[in-house]
Image (cartoon, rainbow over all chains, first blue to last red; front, side):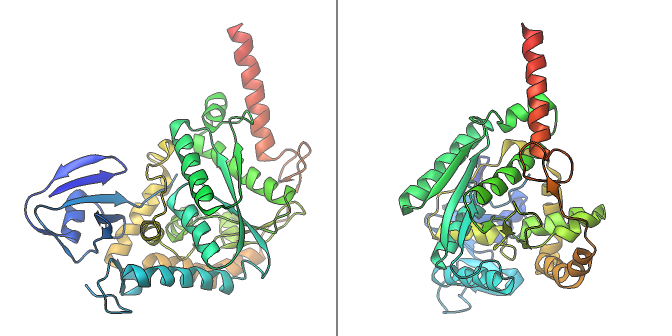
Length: 64
Length: 307
């Protein structure tokens, strides 16, 4: 799967079918700190992302 | 995963509420959550006009949208902070949001006021976030007072409030703890009420709300926030939240119920008036006027040494 991480605009590729929670863990995000977006939908933590999917992982943490 | 309400396909999982929602159920859920916060804390009286401080980020735009959906009469206030391209893009998003909905928006450019945050930081060698906070507070207060708004609403969310509480507790900042509340009543004739209707709404919830409502917000982070202490506190709290969902909400709510009322009753004397601008101040000059004097003095010295 191809992943775009925002706001960094970083591109990452992961192999195989994976659960959203596992993808977030692998990318270093804690639960509830990023949205996983596929097209026009949000994918919740327990759901699967297919190997050929393109997704966006968008951090929701802001501060200063 | 099924929506807890309608049984449809869920798009968000809210661990702290032990609930999943589809978008059609999540949006009214958030309206209700914010509406209840406003009512429970008596934030806005019926018929009051609300000045909404809008940065162009997810929280303040979500707040403005929710307040409109709840039927409040609102005007937006955007401060263009003068932090390079980041501020330009934030202003663009805010103006586009207001124009698309035909909303009234007041925009103030700190650069045009001679007080761009990046200049203030450069000339005074203060941290940029310190100058930024001082200027924001001043302009929100002053514009609300000058334009006759009884209340200013800001987009501070649960994560902001929990991180602030943690920071205040770590250093036992008793005066700050006494003033940490989602409603700040005016303590000076030129203060208006300040409210935080999103104080029980997480960052994830406001981001998901913007996504479902197709609100185009600034995704990039302020360049000055890199390494900010607040982000370290948020990270620590999110680790606790992952292990024990609901921790952040309980931390803030229990503080507000059990500790804050006692601390508030012991709080200090109200502010006096700044001798330069007349706005509330705890010294002869308010923080904004001290900053302005420092910038003017450094600018003059800079110009003299350059000449």
